[in-house]
Amino acid sequence: MKRTVIFIILVIIFVGYVHFTTANGEFEPLGRLAFVKLANPDMYPGHPHSRLLAEYARSHGSKCALVVHYGGSSNYRSYMEGDILILQLAYVEKKPYTPGINWSEVWEEGINGVPADKWTYRSDGIEFQTLDEALAYIRERARENGQDGPIPLVYHGTVREGDIVINQGCGFPLYYHIIRSQYGPLGAYYYVIKGFFYPYIYNPYRNFEIKNAEALQYYYTHNMLNYE
Image (cartoon, rainbow, N blue to C red; front, side, top):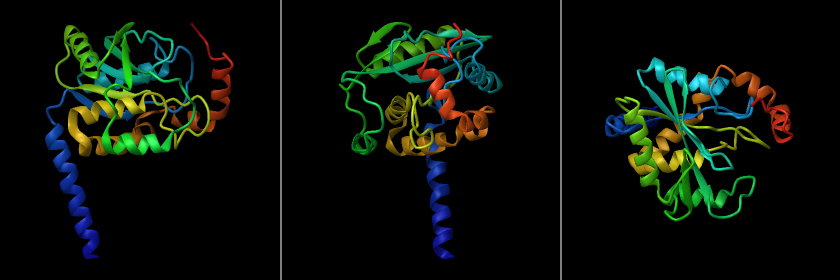
């Protein structure tokens, strides 16, 4: 009983510490937006996940939201979802893409952070060499749109093949990288764990996505979800 009480007290102290140290941060880390792609393009005006993110931003008094991705062929352009500016940022790996999860890499970077020279970054078709340059651009776009306060931040989270629960999907490494650079490792660990649960609470399509994940992954990889 004593150990349980001590553990609960330590958790409360830790959560309180993280919230205190991140209260005036530039980003509000929310977590994972979705499990699988519902349509392609998958962040586009009118798309269900796009509307979902805009609704959160609007209801919390934000004029912008940022979604981060694994970089493919897209330019990751910002766009308006109603009155909300959806900002997009992708990390582009310098080595060839490999499917699946490299657990040794996850462990190494989870402890020590992402090497500064591992990626480049892309937003609005512009290539950035460092995260600082990329985030400075994102901040400027948000400022131009009248943003006041922290920008809601999500990682896209969609998985194109395989397990959708263990694999956190598109953009997760960049999400971790941003919050670690902003709030340090303890803040990053807290927001990563918290972010795992975000879609189970806030994504109204979660049951449909989870139940039909394999079929939706097949439709996407066979170009059957295109609506542009």
